[in-house]
Amino acid sequence: MEPLRTRPRAPSPPMRFGMASSLTIEGVGKRFAHRIALDAISLTVEPGELFFLLGPSGCGKTTLLRCVAGLCRPDAGRIRLDGTDITNQPTHRRRTAMVFQSYALWPHMTVFENVALALRARHRPAGEIRRRAMEMLERVRLADRADARPAELSGGQQQRVALARALAADPRCLLLDEPLSNLDAQLRTELRGEIRRLCREAGLTTLYVTHDQKEAMAIADRLAVLRDGRIEQCGTPEEVYARPANRFVARFLGAANFLEGHVAERAESSVRVETPVGPVVSTTRLDGVPPGTHVTLCIRPEVCRILTAAAPTSAENLMPALVVRSTWLGEMVRHDVLVGETEAPVPFEVAELRPTVRAREGSPVRVHLVVAPADVFVLPE
Image (cartoon, rainbow, N blue to C red; front, side, top):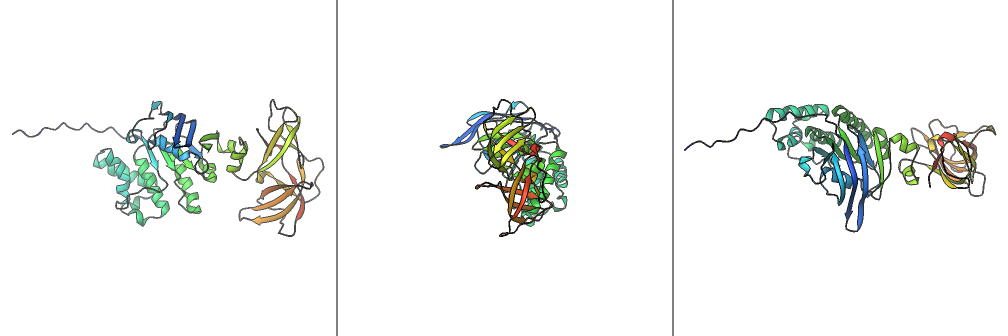
């Protein structure tokens, strides 16, 4: 009897690393029962970009991430990776890798075995598996814990193992679902930099979901703010923070003060708005907005300055105010301020790194509040 002849396995192609790919989401929609989770979402993530999906719980950001990963199929729209339609491709063929909030490590396996799992699933040679897994553990600075079990690691170390496992799979697009939410504040701050470093070194296109605006502002190249399944605004962290599209975006990205008013005068490079606390000048361009139009002014707490001495009457945006409470927060002092001399003063929040005044409860302090016109943003109606 002749021995069984088997077809020799073709040599495996060399693994690539750092293949930055473009991700395009076109009109993606998803409904669960009677709730719309995604409402015609469209966005493009550039090759090598660290892009954040930011928003409150239930806004649709994780659903969108799962659609890109292939764990959830959209009801409408298309998802393309480097121009290839992957909308209906199975998860294992998409060349994406996902890092979950809960780490999803196998407790009975060592750190090395967890990282090597994706490589074994792709039938890589044993030598390559060993080399690649250890290389990824070196990247996350855990090579010395290769023989440890997940239970022997801290939460931050477990998250780095999950990152190493995702990177070992040689993805074209890395997907991160609130990867730092289970960690304490100090570890979150440390791992933000680690994640940005790893994505930069790997040259990976990354889609990152979080509800933590500080996390997004710290490391994102660009971000999209979602609400009720729709994108409210998309841009760099600096653009979205300084020029929010509406009240929701302004509030979600940090503390903000709002003043209602109407356009009194519009010049080429500025606009004067009449408010309950007096006229306020802004350098926001309002093309096509006629005098008398109702508008809302947005002023961030950190751009307000408190003047305790007699202020020059010619100063723009100089408002009488009363500091009713000062709260020391370590890195800064927060003041609760009432602005205006009317019977209904407007409550403001002011943040100072080096406070010029401190007011405790029961001992309010009269001051002037001044805001530069460039720091007053007129929100569109």
